[in-house]
Image 1: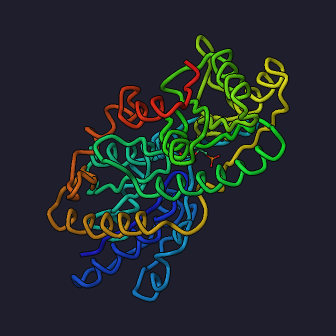
Image 2: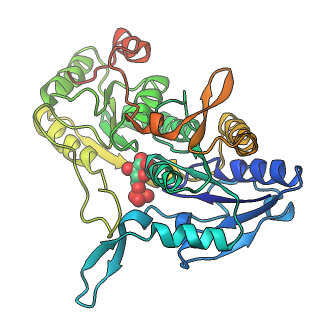
Length: 359
Ligand code: F6P
């Protein structure tokens, strides 16, 4: 048996722990393991395919990033091909990819990725490739799994930042607006904001009204709390407004969401007259050591993925349905993006403890 492993999409803390667990579980069964570099690009001749041994995965479980590298471009079904005039044309290279995998003697692939990479994996399965998926994202937006590794680490990084901002905001009587990742979902903002006792949390699932945000800040002011912390998900948008998008994406890349904190800070300062600062936490949330929770979940996913290969669960992905790791069809998981339920107890508790969602 010869399996291959790839990591695609944005990196998330815990990827190396998945790779390590999968490689060791496979080698301990007497299988060979190949590592495909840079997502599916390694199977399209754009990067290499390497043999993974016990040595390759020694001492990596605690490291952020991925030893296999990754990319969030180059979907083989919509591959961006540069034309002579500099423009790009999309072509389908999926059959070429499947043929390359066949020539390498790959019996099965473990594809670790977010919704984008899992969708590609699902389509390659439909074309006959034998693939098991492992969900990965700091955004926690994949359905069918209670959580994904990387999310807990991102929340803890955001939480530490909120703790640090509290002391400086209070010292200066300032409002500080901190933008966190999450794309079209507000899980990171909600969890870090509630755990960090933010005063306002803005998420895409609950469009905000800037006047309500300012009312909350001024109510605190009148009560003698002259500073406020606003945690905003990058995908949050005002009622009747739109998501803020940063500049141009590279060919084959999804839209880049962000920049909302800056405009919210300007509006708050204008309406309340309070000195307001903003910051974007950005990729700090994706880097660094995975937390113990993420390392354990990632290791469990890696082991479960190899068992899924053994059981020929093609087109399925591993998922956490506490207390167990199960497998579910990738297509089921991708039917709907997982989003914050505005009636969830986390939102309710946030409201009942005085946090405003600007609605
Ligand atoms: O999906 C993970 C994520 O970190 C999002 O939260 C964010 O919008 C996006 O990736 C950033 O992507 P990039 O690394 O391409 O800027």
